[in-house]
Image 1 (tube, rainbow, N blue to C red):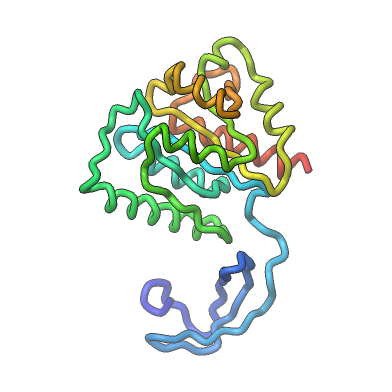
Image 2: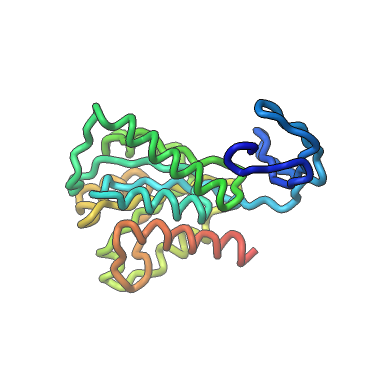
Length: 225
């Protein structure tokens, strides 16, 4: 606060507590190590989505996943699970992986601060497709972005899945890498309770699909309620 943000006594900021409440605070006094502040008021309206949305994304090439993390965090994503899909071009390097995951979490943190989130979305270590299937069991709703559904004009399955979900539940949105998920992967997910959905009548890039899903979820649970 003193070195980077150059705050002084009288400056105001928003503090986020571990119990996911936030308060507007005023700095009373500060030095190089400590800041004494007074709580002006607690914020009543939560910026969090009424449902916990986890984005499972097939490892894409380049820095596309960084864009997904940044923008999805701004749109309210709860966490991220990168996974190794059959069509993933990128081969995960375990030696360099820890630094990359660290960078991903830094991007999430910065985006959460910028958008005044109370929850800091965690970016998990990449998992295999088999591990993704196993972990999906813990979610109330599993939505799979499948372009074949969009090509066939099936746009109702996504809205039906959201209509069946309730506030307080968890939603897993699974998006493939470039080239999408294979038919076999989609079949396995559906056999484990997922709903294959087309995200509108257009074919979206892998980095656009999570943003479409989060915008639709926000509309369903925030603007329609």
